[in-house]
Image (cartoon, rainbow, N blue to C red; front, side, top):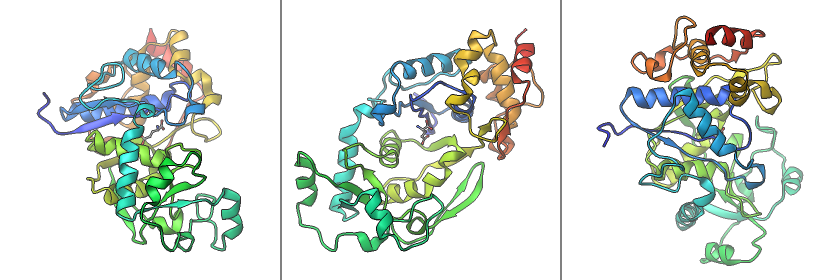
Length: 330
Ligand code: GLU
């Protein structure tokens, strides 16, 4: 048993290869947990069925292990809070939805995206779509609406969360103070889509609460989901974890690494005979955890890990990265 109550997690979506950006998140989240003697969880975020690539999850786990990262609970080794794959956790999401419905925090919405665009008079929020106005909430709901909705063969309505008007503020361990008024940026957001698919915001919050996660480390592209998640955690009566959003690794065009950068996936680097300690070295150096480029294993970095050392600005891939990694591999 661990003496620490720290619980961290790595929650990849098996929708593509394991690239350097994901490896950075895995490395830093792992170092934080290991440096505090906590429990590290691997959770598969395979909620969006059609985007899941068969075999990708196993490959991500194999490559993380190759890098030197291990976990204490996960889909392959089990654990006290299994299952660790979101596709198997629908009953937990339903319990949370039922709880929100009981506390009047949820409502059905039959409007399509096109309807919403046409209805919108508000200026577009920074997320590109108009914020969902609370004027669109049903004025009253019949007592058993949630049960009726859930048992209908084809409910034809999404379930939306009633956001409150307050300012949400939090201190991110990397990005500093963040504040957002969710009612202005996104408004009442979807927790379950019309087609029955649970939204990322719901699944991630329910899983982090049920798995007792105390710190959430992920890419800065998810920073603007955090205020929404905090509101949801509060509505569910949970404890808000610590957040750390890491800078992104970007390619020559300034874009986050994606499927287009296939050469920078761990499987390609491995196939090119790059040593895992070369990759860890480059990641650690780039994020501020190593002063020089020297082959290093994740376990060598545990002792000197500190959030204050982590940089907050995006990391550009140098044009000669593969050469640098090759040199470090010899
Ligand atoms: N599944 C998300 C991803 O792969 C991470 C979600 C999270 O950490 O909250 O980017």
